[in-house]
Length: 236
Image (cartoon, rainbow, N blue to C red; front, side, top):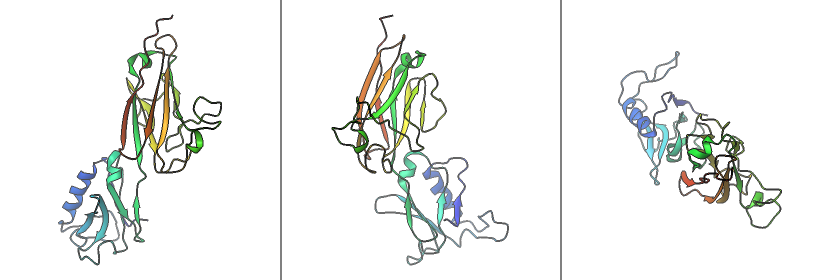
């Protein structure tokens, strides 16, 4: 639990939130939304610090070294997105340090031809099945092949014509398919925190042919971009 929350309703970046915290630390006025009490910004003049790894660590303190993070009042920042989530830590009311899981946004270019093909579909599998080891009845191209899932348990497979264009954990644009993968927590394709190979297929019927791309999802970067563009169908 957190006593304090930055209501980041405008979806500001982490740098913008830090600038805001710098500003309220010098404000001689009420800084919270409680109707029952008043909190002077200068009373809590430490709202974050940098870790040894260069991350922002959100916390509450008066500035004294012994007091930082020990005020018993945690600080949470809402609505951070993308790599900002990987560059922040939180200290809650109990003094525990919390971090976001490492999630990777995979961007797959499929091309305008595939999107225009009303029969085209995409499907992403784990190459090495549920145990993340080659040799088993659930490897790719077997009857038990395992579909990759997003953090909200959405299978990464869909007809392109029906795949949402709204930004979610699995969606498309005019030329790309994007999906989020939880490197920290995924246990569908092996143990949590493991690097995993995936096989992405895109196939049409009438407009484009078929394409297949293989890559490894690691925690080296929060973004991965690959190409899986099927050729133009000429056998019609």
